[in-house]
Length: 146
Image (cartoon, rainbow, N blue to C red; front, top):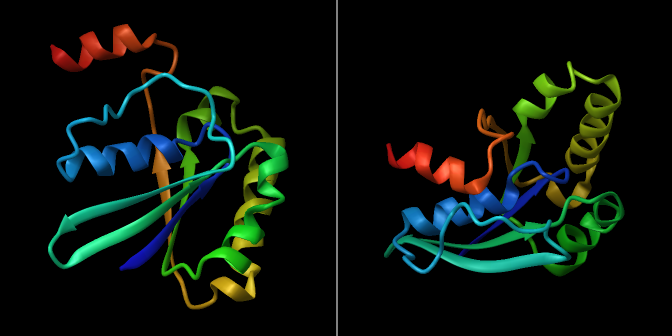
């Protein structure tokens, strides 16, 4: 079984991505768009795409304090095969490409790239764009059904 780490700053869509993967793999109990707080700590789940593709997926929280502990996850706990780094593209548009946000994102991504524990990993940078950011979940549901 391969191991996958989904990382990114708070609100980047890490949990949304994991839930989408679960739904696409046939887990009917999971709804991809569930309004919730940010992830506290980490969420560990197994996603089976088919008989030969099975992944243990770790979704780690992206709040300020939690990012300081990322290295604990990928340095001590688990040897990851793949890192998916999520970036929320619409946040950049909303903040008019805020330099603070770009620098914070760059710092965290470079920290992952510089980590010796992750040198053998595949790294995927995943950009999420949500044009419905200002809508409520009910409005999003009605929009996707029509």
